[in-house]
Image (cartoon, rainbow, N blue to C red; front, side, top):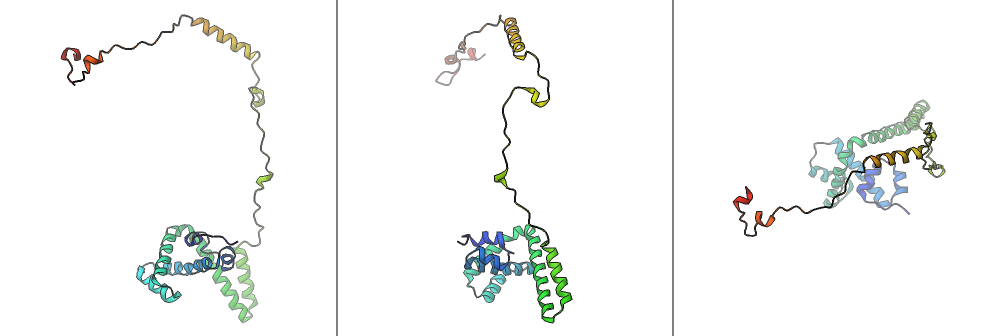
Length: 210
């Protein structure tokens, strides 16, 4: 089943993806929309001073859209522009591949095998097709390191103190004995004479305040 996705999200993910991959990944309407917006996006970059009206006129005449559809595309193009700096590398990669493939096809028509070889070599080097794909980390094969809680410092290379528990009990007894004169007292309410200081009528006696 083809992936169901909104046009804007599809453009953010695959604006410069090849046409074949787009058609495999998305439904026909979404793939065609991404291809159309790609051309509109490139036109927008080539005409940075163009007004919205000019964009709409270009789109309606070029793709046969109505104004509602044209303005909908314009909204997507503008939403993509803040990501220009992030997408610039992908954009130039797309354009480079486009030019190299065009050069290859022209050389092929002329039967210019030397230029064909250079174009193919440049394409392969740029797209790193000579390198093996990176292997995904097999997370399902990673064994979780077992941990066991312990109070034995020797696991860290520290020599344990002899008779530690006995020493702890001795210190507890010592400090409890030294502080036997501490008395516990009960909580007592403070007598603030609140009724005199804060009478219900809002007037406090001067002598109580002073």
